[in-house]
Length: 170
Ligand SMILES: [Fe+2]
Picture 1 (cartoon, rainbow, N blue to C red):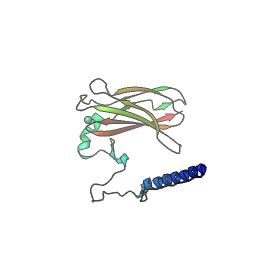
Picture 2 (picture 1 turned 90 degrees about the vertical axis):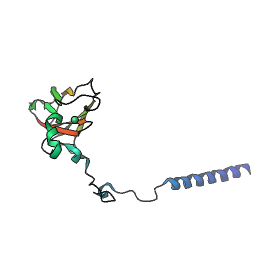
Picture 3 (picture 1 turned 60 degrees about the vertical axis):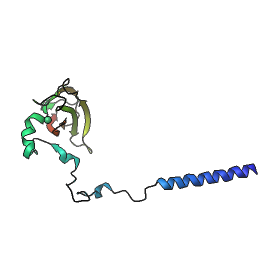
Picture 4 (picture 1 turned 90 degrees about the horizontal axis):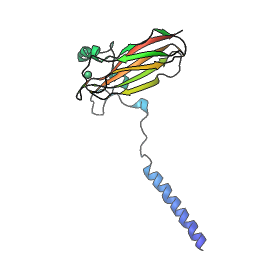
């Protein structure tokens, strides 16, 4: 008798558990990424793909044109390097203010390797503390294939700025 009672209790617990699972399941289908609307429901500003939010020297326009020189990362790297031979890359930004209110806060570095199915490859992120850290970094890299090096910096007032450099592997 006690055993049967235990079995009944387990069956009820199982039912409650299943019910709880259903309770938390989404009631509506989630939108498929490719079907996200290009405008807000109220017809507001276009929802841009994230890549379109990154300024580049060749795409900046309007007010951003005056920020190109002070915000685009400057990449110093060889035009060609030996396969898997270490070489140095220096990335600087500026002249640019370096105050608590306005400074370069972060530099991200990626490469896109020629012939690779999916790019880019993340290399590093350098976070910068205003006043104390200058946006002037050096990396030692090795490449296997011809690649494009991307440096993307973030200014807390003027957004994301990208520069790129092609590096040939011989
Ligand atoms: Fe800025």
